[in-house]
Length: 304
Image 1 (cartoon, rainbow, N blue to C red):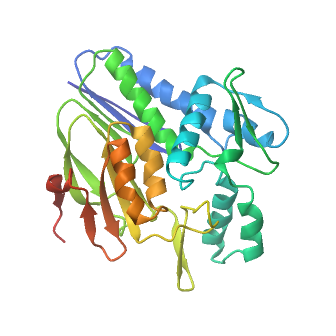
Image 2: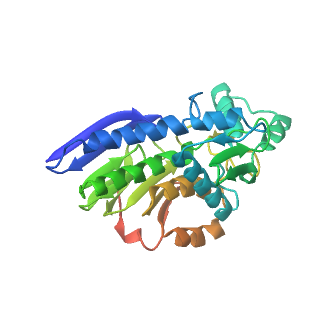
Image 3: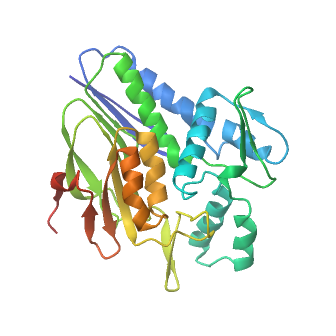
């Protein structure tokens, strides 16, 4: 028997599907958990824990829940492992470039330099004993949006396993965890700017995350401007990739890595993927498709 919940959270439409006769209140519990995480991590909600951290930047530490604290610690760890290519303090820069996309006008170099000084994951001060978080300088802002969906998907999987429901699909809009039966999962085409797939993969008990610069982008003059910001330069990431799909065991880690891989040097990508036990599919701006050895025989391209 199939049971399903479709709901809005984390800025997107999500679908939880279980294949079980033992329904009870499991889906409701999972849905509530996702919304609970959303309430804590939503940087656009002035009452969220992340917003309170941002309001108190350079002023005082903020006591937060275990969810927020543990996720910020994990984000800092991944930032270190990716040489700062993943950084949750890029929110002021992201806001600047989103405005540029809306206005169709590049920001002045002086403004980029000024706002770039507010980005540095090393300036996130955490206190394990008191479970507090503080951003070192006024004007700094954190945003966990690039990692929150993965964290929520992993939490839903934990709940389903605890309720002895082994067969399910958790789809948080681009972040998918498959449980139980092997299923055919589509990989979104970054050139179409839609939900259409350019390829499929057979997925067992693993997570799959797709990210791309198609989500928010525009051409300003001859330059493609998009929403993935390089923390080191303050500019949109200068990547040859249009889309990246990662497959692994931990959706939270994959979410963060998907962002970092658009930014980091290509020669560093294989060792990072190996460290996290992840496979990858890349689609370039020239519409060429590359994949790691562990997944290349499990990718079926859709004929044009």
